[in-house]
Length: 207
Figure (tube, rainbow, N blue to C red):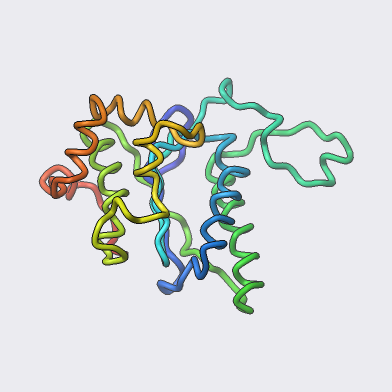
């Protein structure tokens, strides 16, 4: 299993255990994103994301320790009350914290027990510009691939529209557009079928 290392880019993805649903209502999607902001934003930059009914995909860069604002790291209320100094954990543990927190809420909502996410979550090192661009397109076109919509531009739970708007500081929109040499190429690449000759050499399970 690939280790998450500071300063490197990763395609992170996972699905519900036994392909079960992860999201049941609009509020579930919103809640996952709020938890994502709490647990992941302090330790990683996000470049693309999509949430689907039973799985998700993320493209992130793990921050160097010098880039992390330790005051934003999630810590237990007890630690806050006792003024305990925050220690930086291994990056994958923040993702585990996100999944555990979300699982508790869904288990309570759906009156279920046990794991919600398949373990361990998948991660692939993104190590060249071609792969970066293809992962961004793959992520945004994923709702069409799995027949959740006929047009990925209309799908609500992805970063495609946010990147084009350049209005949110929650995602590295300008850097993504820069990787595509501008909005025109970003849009054009998304409107083309994925170049499988480049992409197929990276192992991504069919969810």
